[in-house]
Amino acid sequence: MPTILTVSSWVARGHVGNSATTFPLMRRGLDVVALPTVILAHHPGHKRDVARAETPDLLAMGQDILGSPAPHPVDGVLVGYVAVPPQAMAITGLIAEARAYREGIPMLLDPVSGDGGKLYVDKLIVDEIRANLLPMADVVTPNVTELAALAAPRRIRRAPKLTEDEIVAMARSLGVPTVIVTSAPASAKDRIANIVITDELAVRVETPRLEVHVQGTGDLLAGLILGEIVSGSDIVPAVATASAIVHDLLAVTAKAGSDELALVAGQKAIAEPKGVAEVSML
Image 1 (cartoon, helix red, strand yellow):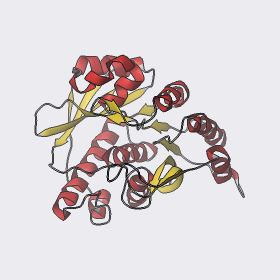
Image 2: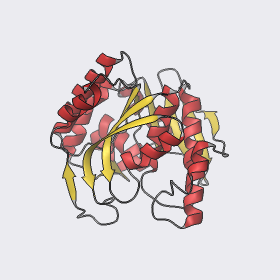
Image 3: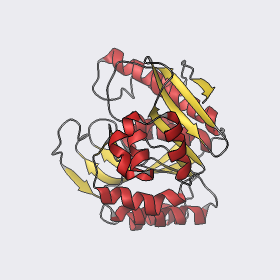
Image 4: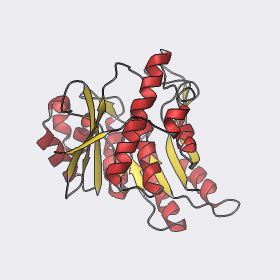
């Protein structure tokens, strides 16, 4: 059974960050070690001044997770929300330690930092992600705003209007083997797209758009993609499967009328998705 170490936020109520990935990955047959960068009462989208507490020594805690009382190697690392700038450097040390236990394990970076042409974290966090975490990543999953923040900060405000060619060029400039741009331009208004970009290809993966607005879908998608990768899937099928699961879970969430991802009600859709994502070359 593959094991994934997830390093991201944890919310007491709702499903974003580690809370959006732990249960779905387990339902997909993977074990999960969840290390919180910060504990929040709930997603800040519900109320901005949410109670929170950062993890003070992330590296020491991660080292203890991996090495005590005996070595506990993992098969992949998912890095999500960085709560304060110094955590980025701590996480690089943790990734290096995880790779010392098991050489060459993949790291997927979900650079949670903004949307709609605006950052919602300290700019220093983005700078630290770019300088320290990006060079260690095998896969990175920014939305269009986060892509611009990493590749072309001066263009972040026009991020929602970037063309496909601009997105592909920015993605390739990051120097990461695989970039998956989420919530990217789709082929039609009733579709939602993720674009998989490597040096050799650019592929659009689409599912039908659903009129439901909840937080945590990006966290969920990133976790599912890494879960498929460590389970042996190639990157495009991994993104297609993850996209189909997110679509099916959103359908359950919409039916339930929930303001959070309906993970428990939708667990059958997580384990056995019925939806199919459409794949096409750009």
